[in-house]
Image 1: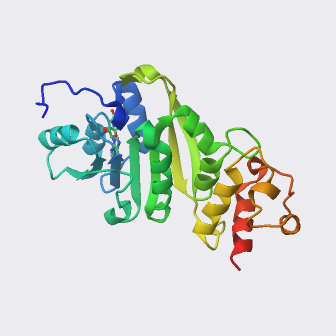
Image 2: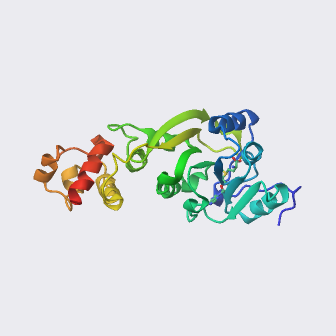
Image 3: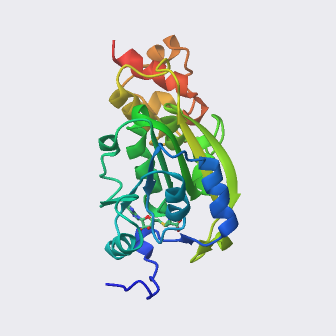
Length: 260
Ligand code: SAM
């Protein structure tokens, strides 16, 4: 096990790029603006770049970390009254077990960012907000409007539940080791009403997946198992349209047409 004075060697398989820029760290924590009683959960605390300033602002901070060496350091460096360490894989973690009105944050491991975002989307009802650092390209896809190349399954599945805003860009030099690409901070806030929600979330997810499975193909082909051309037309959707042309509301209408 690493001693506290031995430098930790960053592990690629855990997507470890540690934040080292005090200015960027301050900007991220200011964007989160934690209050003492907030239930803040940090995914991937690593060497504590965000953990230390966050835990200074809240009564208690939850962290979820997978790397055993880093977990040992966290136990050495923080008091158990202030830091609740959940050891394990954030992809499997039941965020709902921590209560509601959660504020989830993290400089996420980029290699699992898409599945992690899908996992977290399932907890929207128990979340106040989420602030994440991600590859800039992923953030661009999350917030993309219909019609462009960035608009895809990730955009639809997240825009279905969250209002999202790209806050600022973070250059590679803010990390050690430096990643090859720019990063960005994004804020996700659950949409206030369930108005837009499909009657069956699983059906919604299946339709979106089918539509984007071959994004250059027309919907009359990709959705063939679900709708005839006439049925698409009846819903106001052109059978010759492609997945990237449809707004989130159209996917909700498609899912609801399957679940009467
Ligand atoms: N928060 C630190 C920082 O900003 O310097 C570290 C960020 S680093 C990009 C990602 C962190 O997530 C690492 O600590 C890594 O060990 C952890 N991690 C990677 N995969 C994980 C997983 N599946 N579940 C929980 N933590 C994970």
